[in-house]
Image (cartoon, rainbow, N blue to C red; front, side):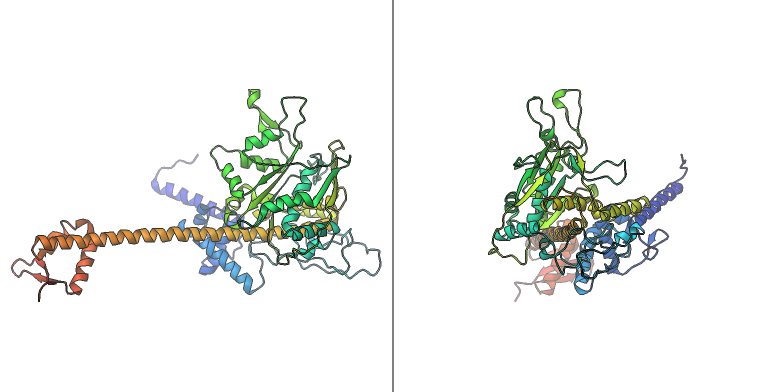
Length: 580
């Protein structure tokens, strides 16, 4: 233990700790020597500095950490964050978005394969390294539409995304690829809803219909399988139709299990973490069948975050654990207070409505990892057409609860992406916080697309590609919600400042009026004149600045006249308003 013997040693030790923390933060952001010099940020233009602050906040740094890192006061961080986001958005409209200097290099352009001239496919080029596999779009095992080319902007493993979207993923790129997706699109447009929102709602509903024994495989031979639990967020302003999409998703699919049993579960409402656990807990009556799957409907995300923000609330940590299918609850001495659900014994889905202006309630929890576990979908559809004829519901078959436990098969592109991501993490190169669960979410989406396509849930290269497009739409929607929440925060901060300024102005007016009353009272008591210093240091002692301002104003307006006693040097003020 270090013994501190003087104040100078204490200050030196404190500065040492601060420098170490700053170095850790710089290393966390991955800043190069261009951005940092000896653990201290190099001088930068004001605009660039604001952008760096915005990127630091997006990376998950707190206001206090940013204040320490950039050596500016806490009050300037939020303002610089908003201005940096606006600068990035403005630049995105003027020129193509460049990869930030502290992010990993952007994936190399996808090599377009020649159109096939025969039904047989050419052999796939062997992958030499995981990093090369990450940057190459594989040939599909499923047959794409004739003439369709792979989408070069589909997100690949480990790609960072902390800025404005590169470009929008169009509806036709996803929904024209399969009859099942076209059916969902047509039914959505016939009802006046957005195809991507309807698809995400259907995906959550299909995943909830699967038994918890259906899993995604682990990466290693002894790795634990992953859960198919998934959360969805539908983004639209108030009145945008989020509730209608949730209801529509039930009618877009007909789900049965392998034994021919129709699956049509009702939606539940979330109350608390304890209530969520109790919903799946083993009932006391052995004759009662335990609940093993549930889809929870959250009308507005602020309701969910309000519940998780209560003192002593366990909802947020419960949601985090249950997304991964872990064991939740606690075992107490009393049987009445014991609530425990074993991992891998339940299937959970959540479908929440999010107003972009209120999205900060969820996005501000990025440090916990909760918003990264949601698949975001926009309620916008620029090509909407309510005259679209309706389509037959998609028939989906899922494993029965009586079927043996099984992990789905995945194509080698999925395994290579997961392996490359794992290798980067072991080297200390972690993805952007917003992409911390991107690959697992994309894999789960691929399972749902396989089931919607009438297959068993095994993920092909085409499933993986389509899941990448849906995940890119998720990124774009999440970014827009992030901007909407920041705009809302800026407006609220501006309104608070306006109220403060108005209050200060009102106080200033009240003080000026009080000084004017004191002057008039002094003139009345002195029969048209008063001793300036006596009044200023007497009745006006709490309003001296205002007294001087009002007095100067009245003298300049020729309402009062100053004079000085030649014998004593005292300054007098005389009322000349009634003099002819």
